[in-house]
Amino acid sequence: MTFESTGWFDTSGQEKTEKILPQLQEVLLSWQKNGSTLLGTFDRDILTAGHAGNHGWHACFLYDVPDLQTVSEMTHSFRATELDRYFRLEAMIGRPFFLLEEQK
Image (cartoon, rainbow, N blue to C red; front, side, top):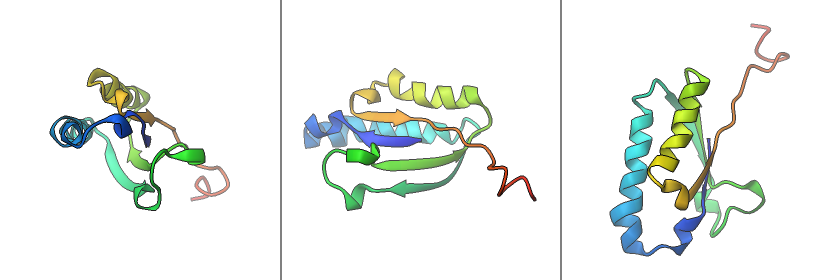
């Protein structure tokens, strides 16, 4: 999942700490209960300021997800909680690269 701050920049510090961050944390915690396993993250936040630019994301969350429906539910969780007003979330699905992983 790539994650980009969008409307976040147009909010007050109070709105961020009292509303947005608790809601974001709740959604991310719910992903732990859907059968997904967090493998790691890439966080560009300390190396960037402002909008994401050409990369199009501030952070990347690497998950092992059981199926396509779960991925759909994860992205929908941002819409359902209206976090999509503040962040853009985009899922990418990987598969084994035949020259590297299928030789095992």
